[in-house]
Length: 451
Image 1 (tube, rainbow, N blue to C red):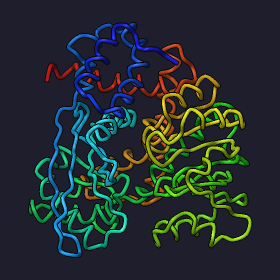
Image 2: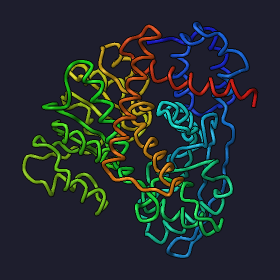
Image 3: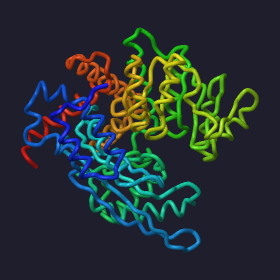
Image 4: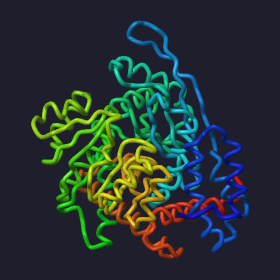
């Protein structure tokens, strides 16, 4: 594991001082800084003009009140955030998260990761992120609509297809994007289709956008496996989560011949040695919005549900692990178990799902490890393709869009691998992703002067 170069230690210390009480953001910055010692040794110019300091400081942070009325007529108040982190490569681009855990530090960590993720796609998009501590679980459609409309009433003044383009994230799917887009259109009197991505096909969305993050992670992990002359065919795979990313990861892994034997949600996980029944999982989680235990009940004999606290989905032996739920879900203990059980590759489908200790253990063991800023970039890449279609008043087929997604993910893999080789760390996708993303953003910032 790389340590922080002494030239960068004062920069990291100042970031931590100025952003006290934000451990997720500290973790994300620390992880990138670990890779930059080799960059500044080779290119000392990156220490000039405070480039690294400026990349670590958001260009703009917006915090706002979101009042709304529930079905009982009671006024509720939530807090909203939008961190417009870096626009050196294009308009800010990043999702909106609806979850009670959301706070400024989490949004900053996500926005910081988004800078480099978006840079790796090679597309003209900057990095940003947003969210709110609103919990959509148990809310009626009417409550969701009123909340989204109130949120957009404040947020719309900070958005635009050339300024900031949000998308979905945890708790935000097509329903929520539709309500937010409708309110944006009403307030601005403009049909600015490119201002939000993840839209329904009926009003300017892109085919394959729903599938893109899960598909993209699978493409990236497949590319890693191919460097060792293997693939998914016949592999035993464990996927955490049961939301959009996990479901489409399972779908694409199965299409490549892998067998997914487990998935999870916040209540626990299920083990299905025959292979996850994707249709049943989608019905339970997407249509009925029920807990994962219902999958075990409906699937019947031979399928087991393990409640939270009774073990980890990572306890199961597997060839490939694909954490696709939330940040810091895979611990150092889990990583040791995976290594002991013979895991060959780990592809991060979520944002920063592995703790620093877990990443260290996996890298030291020589496990193929695809960091989230590279492996889960398929979602934002396809969002950028949606923006492209909106700008040209065009609509692509599913096959055309997925083909572009596959090409982008292969390109990201190759860029990370080549950068790791260039900087003397062959096979280190973490270092490759961090340096490749950083250099692209830093070069653009340097050319624009001190702004």
